[in-house]
Image (cartoon, rainbow, N blue to C red; front, side):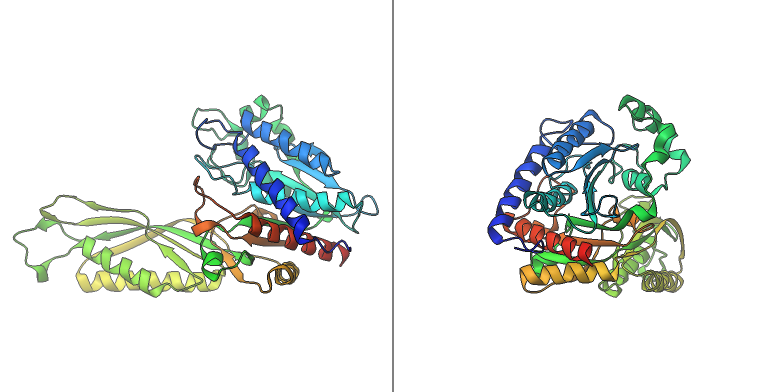
Length: 416
């Protein structure tokens, strides 16, 4: 059997181990009745140690880097070759599910385990990283682990405090790390050929298509704005309907327009809304609301945002109110590498019979990694798309197909 193939029976065995290990990692939590594991906590370090043991059993040399990522290397046929890097994160949000992040790390270990059991080496090394902090739960800074690997940590991060006033530098010291050595985590561009990440889909598209696996085309860019309609408060009983300057009615009309005008692959959400004076018998004079708009390509995203803001101004003008907006968050779309998409797509088609290309609406470590290396992502179906919640759920059969496709893509890319 060539290194490109994993039988259905072998894939089922691998998936069973992955599911059991996801359960085992879910037990490593700072809270007894829910899963919470944050950056540089004792639980994070325990999870790293546990994953390192599984990496070593798969024939890998392991180390914990200067920012707390747990890393392993399965050597190439010729020692010293560049590596295909596989990975995801081991930290969680509070009251998390057990598959977001962990499924990707454990599936990567199974691809290496299969090669190791057959004493097969590839032209490229295979490395695995369990990133230390993707979620940003403890310090409110995201992608600490992957930005350590890419060498793009801002110096200001080490003085950033958590909710208890403990800085990143102090937390590193408590964990046996040295904030002055953060730069040692950075990898040279020539050491890594590409980065691949397997992850649960944090949405319902695969389930809607009745497919286990899909290939990510891009990680959505995002813009977030604080928006404001300003009208005129007035007595609810005495101001005629045609003479009102109702800020909330203007905001409501705009919200409906946003819903109707935003079409796939773009998404837009008004997640917060507050009105003043907020009394049952007073016409709302001021409304504050948020806008979160995302899409896999920056130019269409910008055009649609411009359309939405233009429409808000038109609604305000017609209703005799004013509108303003200020952007407070922006992240560019991250396209996945075409060659990696093709390799993952071919592998998915082999094991599943067809493939589905889809964007990721959520952020991932691949965002940071794409600043240095080509990135590719494989999604596994997740029941109802529920994520960041204990109800995260994947099927063992889907995980088995995921491992088969992952291994096929890894070996194909390494041999190319």
